[in-house]
Image (cartoon, rainbow, N blue to C red; front, side):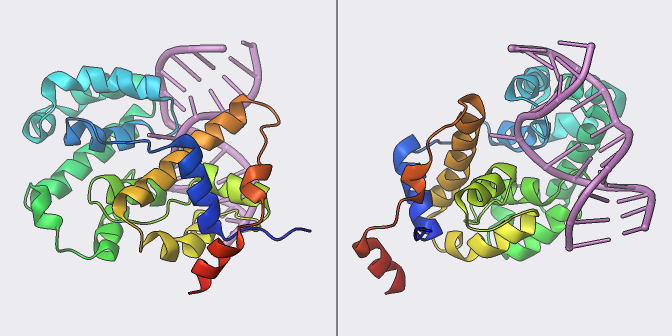
Length: 220
DNA sequence: TGCCAGGAAATCC
DNA sequence: GGATTTCATGGC
């Protein structure tokens, strides 16, 4: 059995191969934020249909003023529309209660924000972490299904739960630039989609032992 | 046609 | 803790 490279090297290789992804950095931050709920367990195509429906009312005030039934009809094409409508309403109410502008969250600890997000309906660990990274600019590691399958395939362990992988790699991600942490998540998912598309996608270049210099850096 | 997609939550043991 | 089931839409 050959020596696997440090996980950081795998992430660097993925980033170099797929390049920066610029996920969730559109012109409208509110759209991005809502998309993180709309995308849950559906395709980006279905999420976009709902997003198009929402564009005419894409302000916090208009969305909160809308009757639930009407909002549900706009969200319907994204699937799970009852749950997603409730989640969006709860998220926006939480946001308004905390001041109604992102600057109000700047000095709050990441773990505090995370537990508050997890307390909202429809926001689990993955969605909370994605929001923390792309809305609140906190570097961390997303232990989603693509990431768990990847590191399990490569032979680093058997990562069955979200926390098993997050606990292992979050200390690593917490100390890299925010954009790097964001790109790590994005390229892992891009690679996962490529793996699903193309049968027998080669991954030996990810498993290859790290150059000596890289290992030395890791220990210094 | 059945399966699944950038999950979460309730329920089971 | 970990495994199962439900929630819903649309594309292949």
